[in-house]
Length: 319
Image 1 (cartoon, rainbow, N blue to C red):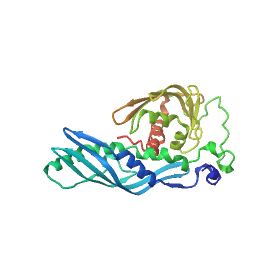
Image 2 (cartoon, helix red, strand yellow):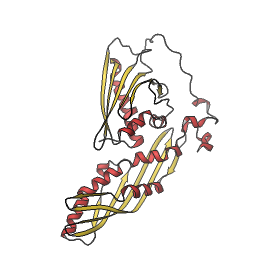
Image 3 (spheres, rainbow, N blue to C red):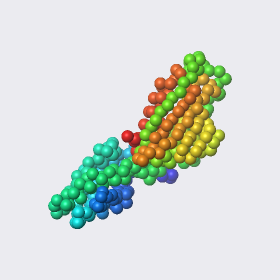
Image 4 (cartoon, one colour):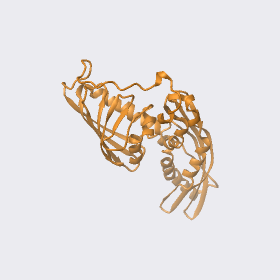
């Protein structure tokens, strides 16, 4: 895409990639062989027979958008109760806005009898749980596999013409005193605590918060961030800045963090702790030294501009 970067300066224009061929390979690889058992009954997916529909990755104004609506047909087999069984699973609709627990599985049985119906029940009650788990990361994996084809990182713009109105503004001179309209700490300082569930591993969330390319995807713009203790970060056109204070890979991030509108020189401390669960990661966030007058707005901004955006961009939606 580098050769045509000048045509899509600052990722302004709509860019779309058809990812259905990739999706067919993805589901075939992920779902074939999926298996479980209950008692003496063993069931598994022996083939992905068909994947049809639309799978597109889009970019507009720096925003990465996943749009998909697919129909899947799977073949299953099982054994137990002294016999074998086989059949088909139809997934009539799997869309970008479908919650994984809402996926519908229509299960049919070849040559039914009483024993085979019992095997089919294990498919319905147990194998579908495995399928849901394997389908959960699809949106995230779709973005990771194809984001470079639709999103141009700012550093790749070098050497290409940039429209004047989109040139970065020089940093504003440092203020020595807070202006009369800036929030004051005179009303006191307070703390914010949030707990956010993501359908992703701690490593995925850790990378999403520190990897520059990923950060630029969910902030929808240019971002500066590093992985070294003592390095600075700059997000949302300078509205959020700070310093990395402590890093424990996949476990903890500590930052000195401030909003541009806060009194000059005042930083809060943000500690993010990653707690791994059986099917999710819980991110526990504690932010101290927040100007009391800014607490409500800061809480909303975390939710809207960080957590909701990350979930929408990478498909990390927690339950």
